[in-house]
Image 1 (cartoon, rainbow, N blue to C red):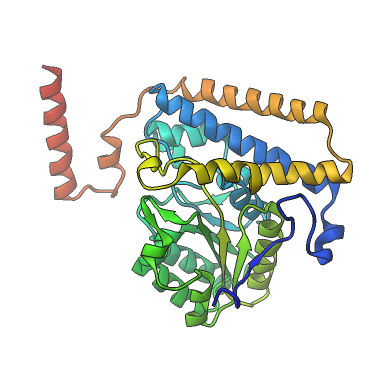
Image 2: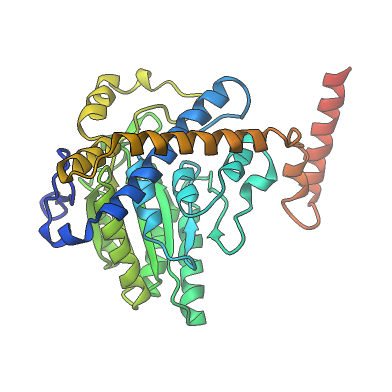
Length: 356
């Protein structure tokens, strides 16, 4: 089955374009835009890990190594499209227009962190695994039935394919030809469980066969493969072609969350090796060097601008007061159920006891 679903590349590890049909579409302006977003997302991710270690934000979910998946796919969206992210897709949300301050507020525990910017259809990050897939299929059907030209992009990890919501979402979208792209970031581990322990199938892309929809397996560290193939799937969806399943094969360098220790279940030497070979940013740098587009001073300027933007966002985030824990009880339903009211009272009693 792996032969039927080979990993598709546009730009290989050496920075060489290996699919000639995309050669003319890889322009200097596009490449520079992608590079800036890749640097922005990686720098932000590292800053968030640092902030968590300092106790300035809560538990954080890093994504370093998966930047090409998130940047390339988000850049393929139109302004009117929907994005259904997981808890690890803040790089994609930022690329699609979510302010950095909003992302920081989310990890600070404030409700403002779930509010998208005006005019953007970014659903709050889904923490329960795979629940966003049926929701995305439903939103896509709504857009279709309203007669719009909008599509939906929904993210999920390899672990989500072990959940019933994955199959329900794909089946529903398939039956109703929903304009949705199911974007799987296969970083090959669901926390500590390797993909070989999760499923017997050799690929995730082949699961598309069960729902009679297109499935493709791409190099998730190749920002151009991600961008072009996601854009093609979204365009097919807009034109009535229905859903697509994309498996982007990637690798996350660090932990599942800042409370996790990956060295207990994964060979960290593999991450060191991949930083030098398959890294998405180095791949783009090699392309720019081959094409004569690389400018050291420009790259330093990009980094300086990104650093300043992130520091400004941190300053803005820290102007907000500490999150109020009672928000999680007050904003579930318009009228709290007796169970939630009971839980809130139990929390308040505990809090009063801690204060005495």
